[in-house]
Image (cartoon, rainbow, N blue to C red):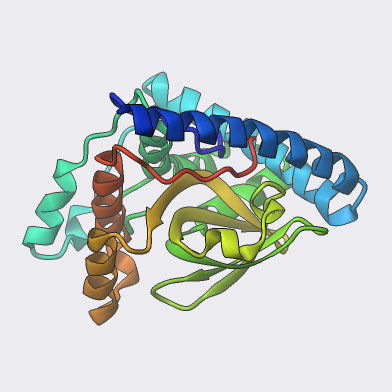
Length: 264
């Protein structure tokens, strides 16, 4: 998995193709700029710590994907604590991950690796319970993964010199300062037109995105309706439902918003 949100699209009109080509050129330019910024910032102590954590995260996620793909992971549901079936719960079954797209793969493994539903196990729990890692640092990091936060965020500010992006949860108002050299490479105004659905991991006071990045235009009718619906009666335990609704909508976009963030 990678946290760079590069998307495969369906058939494009000439205008859309031109727009896609423009984005590809812009992405190459931004990547070059961010690589230079990364070289400059690599001597900063918080960036050194961040890069070490990102490397560990990449190693662990790769091991978890291999664990899943080899058939070692079995999904289990605690039926003793399942609430009475409601229509919104049935809709969870409608999600179909498109493995021909980066976001489809990222979304699928996100649901397998991280704890999204309280009564459903995940690979991170298996690794913790089976004592998969012996080093304290890696075991500690597994618990940070288990406690990670998935949500719909606004980007409220950036710090280009230090590599920080400031984000705010649309539903809870919780604010996070994450390290993301690429995301912090543009002024805040560049992000005023969309929301970012992503997962945040915090380990030893350093927060960063796990790799899942779905961007939604703030003017999109579905997103407006989605926010109104869930703000009326926000329930943190319904994140799986919100994820399903957002992913299903995002996967149908022909002209997706694209976000460039750090690569693992």
